[in-house]
Image (tube, rainbow, N blue to C red; front, side):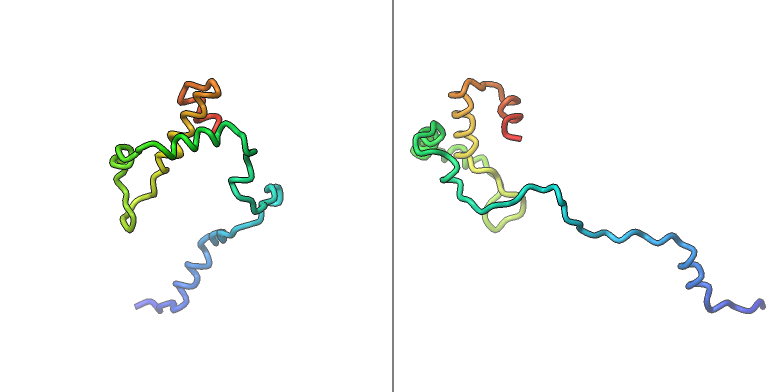
Length: 107
């Protein structure tokens, strides 16, 4: 019987290329984050406030009925129907009627 080499596993490991470590690095070109509330981003008489006031008064129960995810359940949370409805109405008031154009404007 040939003599066994007890260091064979270590030699095999040393021959494999070492994997690069996965680390997070700072993005030095990232814009500064500032704390602000959404209310302060629009002036008091902005058209979007009129749209939101209208949407808040609507019965959106039918839209909520189509949402399959629920509190405490699995799955990603859905976007509130109020937000999507207000976005569509505001876009329409601004002359944007195409869904793809709205999507491009919200990117």
